[in-house]
Image 1 (tube, helix red, strand yellow):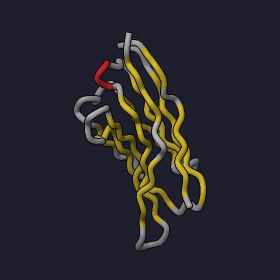
Image 2: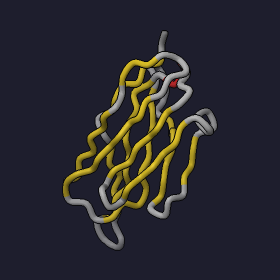
Image 3: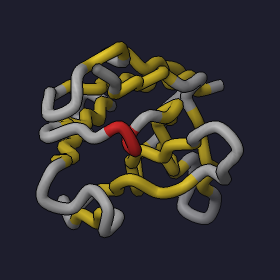
Length: 120
């Protein structure tokens, strides 16, 4: 079994910064894609950013230029540096990894979520 554990959430003022981190543990084959999603109250979960094992990144338009995703496949970690935070960034942020367990089988894993609140 694989577990993802996030850290780094909290309360920050508008314009401030936070860094989220996530580490995977357990029976890990190789990581295909790592990323972060978020869910605000009353809204559906949405993609924030992803990074492939080759380092290709993808960002939601609302965070492009403000957030930076980084991953370390050797350490099974992914991080999200969030700058210039806005109140609308307030949400529960979830770490995500798609992990290969064999040549033909991969599986999605999710962290438990960490709260990010942007407020003065």
